Image (tube, rainbow, N blue to C red; front, side):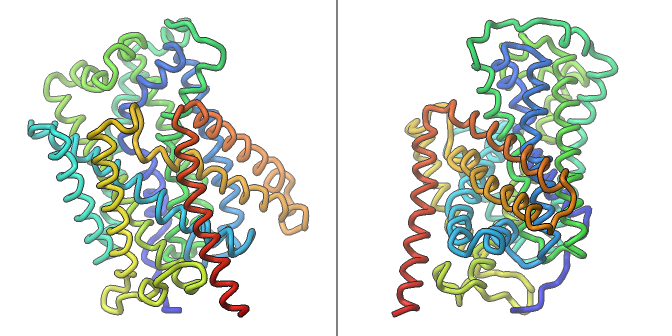
Length: 448
């Protein structure tokens, strides 16, 4: 195996987790969460806290596995070492062909939406997709040509995107009326467990935290720094989300936020800074979404390379995809492969939006909830390490995987609220089943 340089430190790893999770979602999902909770701010905060258990305790679980290896591949490597090679093959295919490219395609399109708004361009789907295509092409090139350049952009975008969140949170908490939101009752009547639909936007806002594990082999002192990042990052995200949610609900009444939907962000900006505020917030949001795309691509381009190192038995074209450019010290072939897969999903996304194939949804939702099924298997393996005596602490070996599993179950229950869940699950399961058939075929050839 080629010697891999340790390009990333603890701050970049934390920035990657925060940068991927904090994208456009938190800016434009607050109204969805309030609508789902009937306008109840306390219930909305509760959903945030419950949703956060999936990444805080999940991060603690994954950190136990991360501290025991620094092989490239991240979550795929953990599945291979602690569950089995066949299941690692399934997870790898799922992430490479569905998870990463669908999210990349949709979030790149969001960049196009906001760029068109900022410059008052005609916001047709074609124009939005063109801008998104050009931006993700730029990100693929930047991250393929220089690990430091991609990491530097991630650090910068993470710091910049925190500015509007912190400003709105601080102004709302100190100059708004947070007590009114907590003292008010729901403005809309809730039927049964209808509030569970709030899990969807919360899960979207938190998603992406495990992508940082894909650069584990390139993190300096990864056995210490990656576990730290997997704990610090989610805690920062939770604190930021809750503060922002309370802050924005303090500056505008919950019912007003529900009525204005996504436009409530601009109303808050105008209230705080005047007419210039709306444009300023939009610029920050664009940088935030750009950082999300960059962070996803930063991790994605290494996935086929990682799978290729395991040989042709788990992934096709391994000799080609397993090469690193000596000049750039980057898996350029792997990045080009990812670019092609993403382009395919960009085309799929264009037609699903153009012809309203997935009403009130998009292709990125295909994999978000289903990915937590894989995580639950890893959480169980952490418990198994405790039973074997490899983990001495009952908190780390029992309580942490238990709460991580409950958090994942909470996210999955939110996914079940979607009428398209069975379709999404079918696509994910089909991808994994094809990978199993591929793996079994090569195993039979080996034995023949």
